[in-house]
Length: 306
Image (cartoon, rainbow, N blue to C red):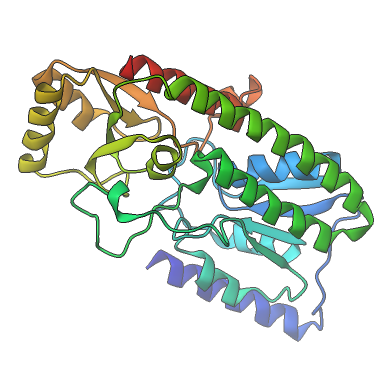
């Protein structure tokens, strides 16, 4: 298994370090705190809090699906030199526990951004995978819970770099205000809508739906690259026809094949809802971020439910 090979390489690295008596982490003299993040949203949130005081590295490359991604030896070597590591938790990064066991950097501060955020009630898990022990990790899609993630991240920065605590607090307060404004936009736009059901290819939007009184009808479960069986596809097609659903959503980084098949047989259109697990280099260069993508999601939902 790939992760076992990675762990073996890391153990070898630690043995070499131990032999040469280099037990302390060597940190680059950049004047910035060195931060590693597990995928895009963590990178975006950390960049917002850290600002010019931090050098933030996103471990997952642009355009890569993070659910099945695993770090290679170079990524783990980078973690050895970092001061702060930020990950989401709730099962989003299956590799974190094993990798952290191999890290020799005892000064590394680890932040689980979703710590303290409750799991979803079962009513928001409609797919065949529901009840199998998997929890929805996409807490950031509800701006209220994104605030909790920012709080945990901000506290991690202050622990790692207490002399700049006021700077991190100011950035935190700025983006909490933006999240409050985003939450209000969602409430104001969705509250008047009579329709409440959104059909999605995978059940990544439970926290968003729970926050705004929506109900996700998921073709399949939490794993983006899984595919439903024929019976489930037929069930969704019937539901769309019976309820006059206008749009079936798929995720931006997953295949549209199943959604297109259902759309072709139901009369619905295909649309995109972005779980913000990754952002292309082009979008990042154009200044897009969590807030701009969330507003694109809001516009797509409103268009589908009007």
